[in-house]
Image 1: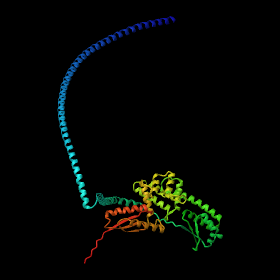
Image 2 (image 1 turned 180 degrees about the horizontal axis):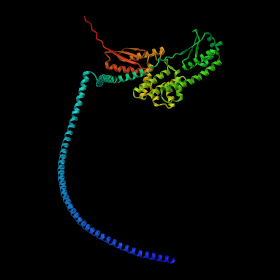
Image 3 (image 1 turned 30 degrees about the vertical axis):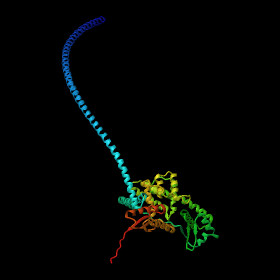
Image 4 (image 1 turned 90 degrees about the vertical axis):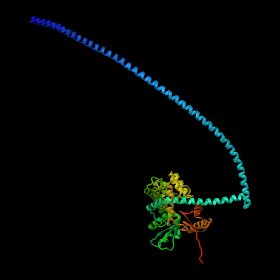
Amino acid sequence: MFNEILVGGGIATVSGVVGFFISKKLISASFDIYTDQAKAKASVIENEAHILLEKAHFKSKELKLEATKSFQSAKDRAKVDLSQRENDVKRKENSFNKYKRNEENKIHQNHTIIKAKLIDIQRNEKSLESLKEKYEEKIDEALHNIENCSGMTKEEASVILLEKVEERSRIEISHIVRKCEEEAKKEAKEKANYILAQATSRFAGEFAQERLSNLVHLDNDELKGRIIGKEGRNIKALETILGVDIVIDDTPNAILVSSFNLYRRAIATKTLKLLIQDGRIQPAKIEEIFAKVSDEFEAGILAEGEEIISDLNIGVMHPELVRLIGRLRYRASYGQNALAHTLEVAHLAGLMASEMGGDSILAKRAGLLHDIGKALTHDYDGSHVDLGADICNRYNENSVVINAIYAHHGHQEIETIECGAVCAADALSAARPGARREVLESFLKRVTEIEEIASSHHGVKQAYAINAGREVRVLVNATLITDDESILLAKEIAKEIEQRVQYPGDVRVNVIRESRAVEYAK
C-alpha cells in the first residue's frame, strides 16, 4: 500500500515538472510573438513621424517665405507713409512761416498806428485842458453875472436848489413807497386773511373778565356777627391770616372778599365757605382750615398745569414751570384772566404756525409760556418779561420760547415763524372787544396823547381818536399834503405813537385828504 502511494506521488511529481517546462515553453513563444509585433508597430510609427517632420519642415519654409513677403510689403508702405508725412510737415512749416511773417507785419503796422494815435491823444489832452480853463472862466463869469442879476450868492442859490430837489425827491419817494405798499398789500392780503380766518374760526374762546372782589353767600345774617366775633377778633384774624379785605355791610345774606391778588382771594373765599359750613369760627380754626385749603390749592395748581400740558400735547416740561402755568389762573391783566389769555394765545399761535408752515407744537409751547413771568410778579421785582425769560432760561427752554417772551412786547426782533405767530395771537387775544378793561384815567390819558401826537405834524387840520383809542383819524390840508405824502405822514404818526404811547393791541392811523372846490352862480 505504501509502495503504491510512493509510486503515485512520483508519477504526480514527474507530471508536474513536465507540465511546468511545457508551460514555460509556451509562454516564451508568446512573448517572442508580442515582441515582434511591437517592433513592427514602432517601425511604422517611426516612418509616420519622419513623414510628418518633413511636412512640417516644408510648411515652415512656406510660412517663412510668406512672412518675409509681408514684412517687405509693410516696410514699403511705411516708407511711402513716412514720405507723405514729411511732405505734410514741410508744407505746414512753410504755411506757418508765412502766417508768422504776415502777423509780424500786422503788429508792426498796429504799433505804428498806436504811436500816431497816442500823439493825437496827447495833443487833444492839451487842447482839452485849454478848453477846460476857458470853460471854468466862462462858468465863473456866468455865476458872477447871475449873482449880480439875482441878488443872491452862490451858496444861497445852492441851498434853494437843494431844497427844491429834496422836495421833488420826497414826492417821487412817496410815489414809489405807495406803489410798493399797494403791491405788497395786494399779494399778502388774501394769505393773511385766510390764516387769520382759519385761526379765529377754529378757536373761539370765551370772554375773560376778572373782578377785584368775590361774593360769599350766607344762609342768614346772624353769621355776620359770628364772622366779626367779639370786639372784631374773628374778622381781624381772618384779614391777617388770609391777606384780604373782608367787607361786611348791609347787603343781605352776603359778604365781600376783596383783594388785587386773585390767588389769595380764591383761598380766602374757599376758607370762609368751609368755616361757615363748619360753624366754628375762631382764630385757631381759621388757621387750621387756611393751611388745609392752601395745601389743596398748591396740589390743584400742579395738577391743573399738568392737565393743560397734556391737553395741548406739547411734550415734557419742568415741574416748576408746570406749577407756574397752573398759578396763572389766579393772575389777571386789565381784567383778563392770565391763564385764559395764555391758552387762547397758545391755541391761536398753533393754528397760525401750522397754516404758515411752522412747527405748531413749538408755537403752542411758546404761546403757553410767553406770559409765564406774570405768575411771579407778585413775589419778585421786575417786569414779567424779564422774570419769564430768566426762569425759562434756567430750565433750558427752546430759544424760540425765549424770543417769543421778549418779542411780544417789542424787546427783541421776531426771528421765527413760531415767534411771529405768538406775537400775532397775543395781539388778537388782548385787542378783541371785551377781553380787557382799563381804568378811565389811563384810558383818557392815552387817547389824549394819541390825538396830540397826530395834531403836531405839519399839514394836519384835525385829529380824532375813536374806537376806544384803537384808531386815530387824521384830517389833513389838501393844499399842503399830496396823496403820496399822506402815506409817509401815516407812517410817521404810527412810528411816533409806537415810541411814545403804551397800549395793548394795535392803533390804526387813518389819514384823510379831501379837496373841495366851491363857486357861486350869480
